[in-house]
Length: 305
Image (spheres, rainbow, N blue to C red):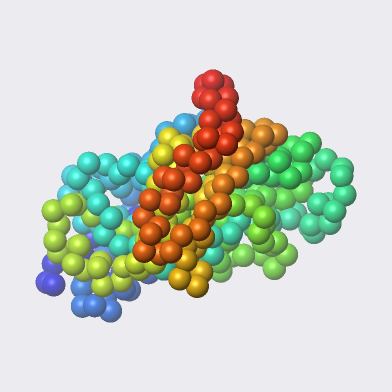
């Protein structure tokens, strides 16, 4: 326990908050650690919509490289940003207990505009949020919104938009959720949304042992199901795929969907299984969704380029 564990993190307020939680957890179990700041591609290109960048791991790649080069010992990620197939040599060390998985609407003023049929402007860089919003509110105009949460909140204040969509967990963790924000409980989240992942090199037994002290097995099992669903569909940041698994009274309830990018087509799937029988639930749900119309939507997205 004498070695100081170097924790790699992005420089945004949210990323540093997450890394600091891991630092405190390590400290509770007698491990000394320090934060090491790494700039990611997703932080340097703040203009191109994420779905147009089209690469998985845009927020994790720089940390992966630093980890494999032994510049850091562990890296802390918002798990929804992590590719379903991690870089060779990097493994899951811990998943923290999940926070809110919800998306929220932050209105410019109030949300009464959603109560009528007039067109309105909503900002998001997420193709998933865009598709689900257009499915519920066709005719809306969607604007691109990039930057860290502080920057995005400021853009909402300075814009003429009706509002913008955020992940609840990100704003709540750093105390920035506006009082007028509305939970979008009808919007299925990104796979693993609200979960924090700690990774390390596969042969680093010290870090694996250290992080095992605060690994949350239930959250890990649920987000693994969601990520299996995403992997089976070969989905990435340019595919509107959503998934949520939760343990309820000894059973795992899974919901997932895929939409066309314009929101006009949607296929849902729902599964339930005992916790002991849920290991393959994500893959089984994906196959069921594909057979029930999801394949046609997926092919349409792929043909768009």
